[in-house]
Length: 86
Image (tube, rainbow, N blue to C red; front, side):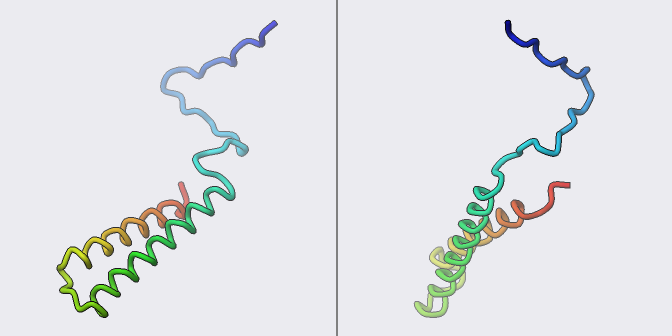
């Protein structure tokens, strides 16, 4: 005999999360994603600096701007992953 489904909350009532409910990437997986994104941000920032300082590319060159935009995007993702979800 199958167990009955739990009762559904009334419309408009917020669902309560239990302290053990998992959300998104949890535990080690989330830490690895944060480390990977942070490493990508550092590598892209280094690439932009290398192109600007060593190869003497203009700062508005696509070879400098593209890695800067990528580094900023990955840095933003790292910030979003480590910020509290309050």
